Image 1: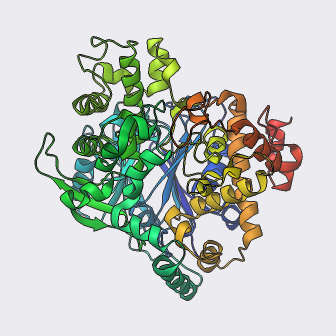
Image 2: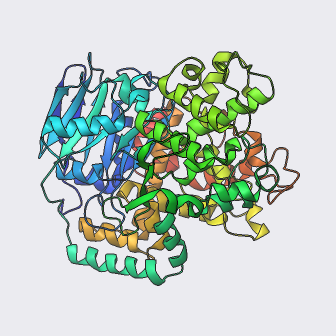
Image 3: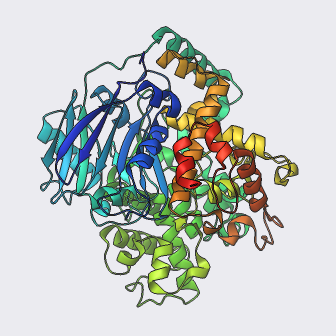
Length: 620
């Protein structure tokens, strides 16, 4: 291969301790690009259907993309892949920071784990050499502590690591994989899968330069991206994200119908109000707590910020600014306007390794159950889970993190908790067992299709029409005729972006064709729009086939009625709106060549994408 890849994958059997290298073929790279594209090909080939997600046969992978660490702007992402213990189907979760580029510099495009260690271990990789090491002294440490301990143990201050905190060790189904202390591969329970394997961390250090076919072209595209960020159509938006991060619009979102409120049962302008919305808006509190900004690898934006909280009810010291999804899930979703409570919950989740979307949403669900006397004060360990009770939100988040008392049940996530308790299901806001993200399909109806019908349900970062609709006031966006082409085009663009190792912020600012131009410059291949479309459709289809092979049908992933306006809200910006998510799903499936009853891609669709082996699996 000419560039963009180091050309090696690593396979680690934690049961036997064996470590094997495998060449990444050029045909694999061209067909699946990278990230979860190569990830789904590897897992589909290695795994049988029906394996226990928390058992030794589940495969856990960490994949980079061809742009990760190449110097391409926004090219700092990596992706964790596995079978989800939450949904029982395909799972991927990606993260920024510096771990992905360092893994490539250490000599590998990706690492895959099978089996289950008898005692806690971590994988240490340095410049192409890998070994399993004892992690007994690391077990029990939080994500910040373990990264610091690994730097001491390896003697490498520039080491980077992907780790789990105590939540992953205790197999919380909301556990995620953390890196750089504050970045998270957050959704679907991948931290629990890592914990089930007794794998505490992957620590990497590399000094090898990542090959690039045309570095001059990458620099040229970089200049066009920075120019567009400063003076292009999205310049104002990018400036806002650069100054305040993803939380730049949290206050506005609580009022304009974007943010769900009161466990999806409320209306921002009625139940939350302008004063509370302003209290959780980043510009209101940023200057008070911000110590410095920071960026992920190869990022010209810098949406992250380090905070310091030395007073108040929760003086946590140095911590990180919460993302939009975090501020909403612990804020408007719980009718909470206490920013220091949100900062505390964010800090707990980062340290313990928990998905902030699912934890905040689970607390909100428990609050509605408490308010409606489904749960009593005795059930909740004496914590009064009333709407907006900041102290209760923090206390229950800590119990979830510690897997203690009622928190041990909630650590399973809201859907699994409702099933175990035998009550509260009527208030769940989930798809296929996983909590909904913090963008309302009633404002951006395309999210209804994505949340319900993507192979990784309940994700706001999987493209589709929803990305185009939030700021669009045109009522025609609620129509369901002729949606398929644009829905597939936006989705496949994001599929390629995720597989390549790019951040979505790059898509917002970059000039047209920058993404394919970057891939061409890094790899030396011809990679035009039609090539991107074909690769992305292949990846989408193989993820769909993975779920079909697991017995998952479209009807199994029903979305909570509140999210789609069933019944419609009676006030606010989304008043009277019910979205046609089923029709949007039908349109998308038809265009892709998937049956919307069985979920199966047709023989013709599979053969057209070169997935002949999948034909044998699904149509034998």
